Image (cartoon, rainbow, N blue to C red; front, side, top):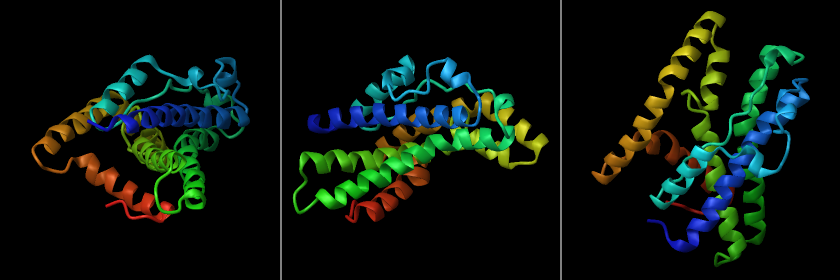
Length: 217
């Protein structure tokens, strides 16, 4: 179980980062001419507009279990309203994880300016923000429904194959994702690295080390 002084920063940062992730989707679709996110009150920095009840509960449970995973309320869009439906829809999906990458870079810059020798409270918050936002970005790029990656990957495929892939991923993606998450926890308890740890966590730590300028492993 994580230390108590880490739980609150992690929870706050995860919730805010998920909210900004969803805002990135909404703002991009709105800028492309789709009024749907604005009509549904999603083009806002108010984090409560982006919370999903089940996803929020999952964040709280999993943070206390030693890892944090959850999701925000999906942003509904209608590509038919966009100026360039295929490209603009692709970008509106991409802007979610891209927002998390930008947040990680900004927080890393603050960390580099503020950090001297010992971690101050500001340093700790910026450190957590970098790692969490990179993790959210990489996690959401997995090509599994309902994550952003399945729409992005499907859009890069030839149209007919892309439609079939997206349909398959939306049907089975969540089951595969849950198997990876909870099966990975069982593997970790047995002393083996989980698939997500190999696929996501190691690259996240490597990039975080590069951004922060400190050794994490």
